[in-house]
Amino acid sequence: MDHPPACGRAETGAGRAREKRARGGRAREGGGAIRGRRGGLEAVGRGMSTVKRILTASLGASVVAGIVHAAARAKVARLRAQPDRYSVEELSKEPTGAETFVERPDGTRLRAISAGEGFPVVLAHGYGCTLLEWNIVWDLLISAGARDRLRSAGARALDPGSDGIGAAQMAGDYWAILEHFDVRDGILVGHSMGTFLSIVFLLFQPGFAAERLRGTVLVSPTAGEITRGAPQNKLQLPLIQSGVMTRIMQSETYGPFFGLSLMGDEPSMAMIDAFNPVFLAQDHQRLLPIMIALQEESYYSRLGEIRMPLVVVCGDKDKTTPAWHSERLGSEIPGARNVWVPGKGHLLNWEAPEAIVEAIQSLRG
Image (cartoon, rainbow, N blue to C red; front, side, top):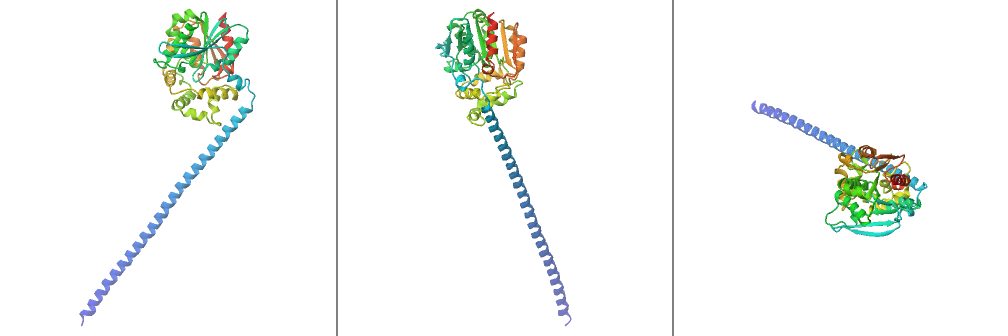
């Protein structure tokens, strides 16, 4: 009679213990669920914060882009409202004269224009340009009444031959132009890339140069290393090489800024509107070797070898071939002298054509 109640009490105690443990387990499970829900909410909160930051950053970038775009449009509008010294029509007209094609032994076909019968002047254009860049200087020389016999060297890229495109080959084209027109006692005038090639020509053909030329004018010049001290070139040249610059220059809003970067204190939309189509029409991939040569080759260590009366003309706001190029050319070529054009940039052929004509006339004696 005593055992059943005792046994019953033991079972009851065990049951209570199990129920207590079960309640504790349920409590723990409930706590886990609560913690799980809280953790989920925290994760959602962190995710929402991340999304908010992304949206804020995107909105900020959009606002900045909008401000930049509006500023660019306003800048272009102000430029178009300014008066231009020369009209687009004047700047887009090629020099007038007799057109000639000169064939080279490797199959290269050069294009040249000539006019006049007097003192010979050979004009060599810069990278991305054509004979068109010399139109204002050409007219000034003719209108001066000096009866200059003008010769404008054509671009090798017109029909490059089997020797390809490079500094030595293109400098050899200058030899071909001087020979074809039988230039004697002439003046060679180069602009930008044309100065680089003129220097290579003077170094590689010193005897022939001395026989045919009285002097040389280097306008916005370089003897190589065109990215040195020129952050603008470091940015722009890869864009040109990749083709991105072509797409940028086709933009009505951003296209003018490449031409703008080439000018000094008085930029002209007419000059930009005349320059951009010519630059865009060039096959820059085919011209890549000479672009690389301008960056990687250097003839500064050999400037002392040049024996030729020489005038170096540079705008003091030129960011494409900054002042150090002209300073070295003027100081290291025996007998050379510098002409600095205040407030002007790289496009001196249009920004300050009179300075070029004066430099030419100074070599005539």
